[in-house]
Length: 286
Image (cartoon, rainbow, N blue to C red; front, side, top):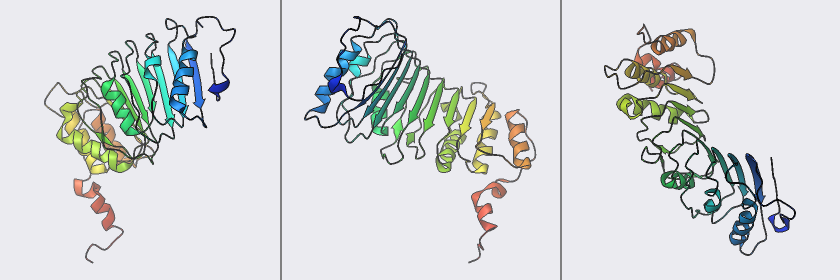
């Protein structure tokens, strides 16, 4: 079932049964002109949510437009059987006051909101079964780096970033198997490769990476060599690498062999570096 209401001031759940036994619910909320918008919207959302059966609802999609003060998390926490949750906040103008998100069987979470708000929600959530997180954001939003810790996301299996200007303070996620940097700029992809060269044990279960932009080739190959030829059996070998476009035959062969766990001839680190590429275009003697 899909429900969209762009004007909560006129919404009245007249004639609805006490509980709607539905598995999926979508709501888009846009408001303007309220003297106290937050109280009004929170109150009316509560009326809507009261008519959804918390025992049957499994997928919830919420789109709040022009939210300024508070996200009514308390209403969401009523639905204890939700397995998929999508929250989109557009045109947020001030920090949000958030109650902890507490959903005991939530498995998949999509957050589209400013990074600072994402971090607040991620650090305080109580979702012990959460395995998949997608984080989206507007490139105009600025923030301090986001910290994602295994203290609250112990069983996280997949993490997907969908913002170009990534701000991520990399920590340890011991059960993460899949990482997608699909929309992330090249320099941030390179930062992750550097981290993995020095600290491969921070992601011991990682086997798949999707890069949205090319990292520096020397960093990528050093990362794969370090990862796939560690003497420690506690760190899984990387098996799948996704790059945005076609790779030349020499590099394609090298990358394929490394992913298969075999060392092969490759260009030197100097030949692969940005400095080498720049020297073919500019006279370095100047």
